[in-house]
Every structure is written in C-alpha cells, then in structure tokens.
Image (tube, rainbow, N blue to C red; front, top):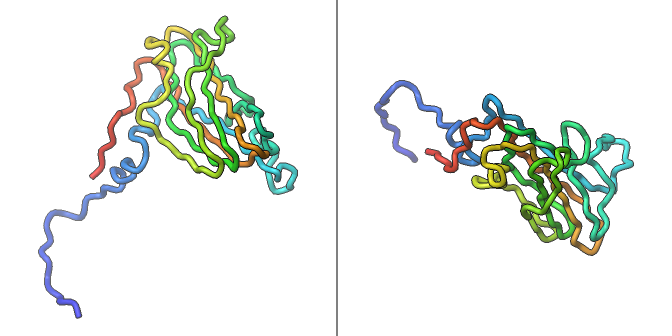
Length: 196
C-alpha cells in the first residue's frame, strides 16, 4: 500500500514543453517562414494501379522493372521533374523517405544555370542507396542545397531526382523527398536541435 501525504505546490500551473519535445523529434526549424515554400516529389509503385480504390494520380505507377530509372513526380503539378528554382531563390532538401521491396539507388542531378537558361543537368550527389525491404526516413540537419553550387543564387537552377531499381525483381514501394525553396536572405535553418 502506498503512503499518502500532502505535496507543496510551487509556481502557477505547469509549463508546457510539448512544442520543444516535438521539435527534438523532428528536424529543427521546419515551420515555414515568409519567402519559403515547401516542395515535395515522389513515386509509388504497386501492382494495384488498376484497383478501383486506388486514385488515378500521376505518381502511382505499376511496379518498376529491374535496372529501370524513374524520375520523381512533383506532387503539386503531377509532372515529372526536373524542377526549376528561379534566380534569387535557394533549394534545400529537408526530408528523405522511402521503402521498397528491391534494392534502390537515388541520384540527384542539377544544373547552374537551369536547363531553360542554357545549363545542362549533371550528377551532384547520391541521396540514398538501400537494400530491398529497408525503410528510410531522414530529416537531415546538413543536407543538399543549391547554395553549395551558387552561394548567391545568382542563377536559376534545375533539379532532378532519379530512382533506379537495382534489384532482380519488379519493385514495389514508395519514395517522398521534400525540399524548401526560399528567397535569398531568408534566415537559415538551425543546425542544432534543442529539447528539454
């Protein structure tokens, strides 16, 4: 049996740290500010494309054959990227999320200036390689950004993310990448996480 005794009350009410605790679980600074826009691209491969309950959306595709590359689809427009960041704006990837039943490679291509302005896409980085069945969810603190190629954002930029099925069978699963497009001069995201 537990002892019952009075407890002295100190202060007024109880502080609410829920916002700080939540910020410690996710990437710091993800709430959008003025002059920032969230961009999201992805693909979903399934053999249920023809099933009546699956909506006919452009990013839902039949399983991806081995060795075949696929360009991510812009969720806002339904069009395959490349995506263009105008001059005066920076691009920063803030989230990577995928799960597939086959081995997968992701390749990030970019151009400075954009393809429309005479540039050509070149390989910049490999945002991920995973074995089949792996589930990846990352909120990177230091990540891919156009400021690496063009610190003043003087040029427009084109971006493309290509997914390749490196497995032996048709690939099912999905991928989502999110980025922030922001005007030059917007205060940067914090590079540390603080929680209590």
